[in-house]
Picture 1 (cartoon, rainbow, N blue to C red):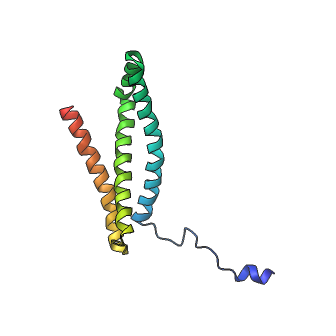
Picture 2 (cartoon, rainbow, N blue to C red):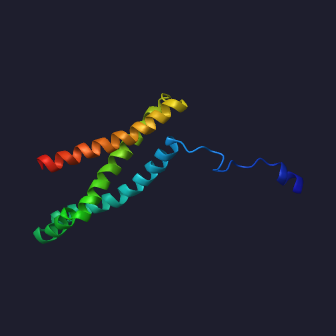
Picture 3 (spheres, one colour):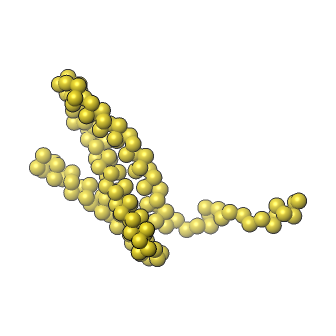
Length: 130
């Protein structure tokens, strides 16, 4: 019996793998997906407050208008866009395109750059025109 245990192949350990951008984007995709649950609950709170009357809505609006609220909204915007671009990246991979190491790395980097750039452009537009 002990010979069978030592002859079994061992699973690769994390120390064997070199950290790659695709790994980071996979982790961020999961984190942003979880963050979207919390952000969506806050959005639902805002909608319920809007339907509940002026007093509840003013409380919710004051929260989202505060510094903390705006930071949360900025983070929610980035999480939403990053998760969307990550989903598009996976959709591209599902078609069999971009699976090489070089292309998948470029797509992972583009996901991060596009989500950050679009978040900043959107928020600059909100500040300037809103």
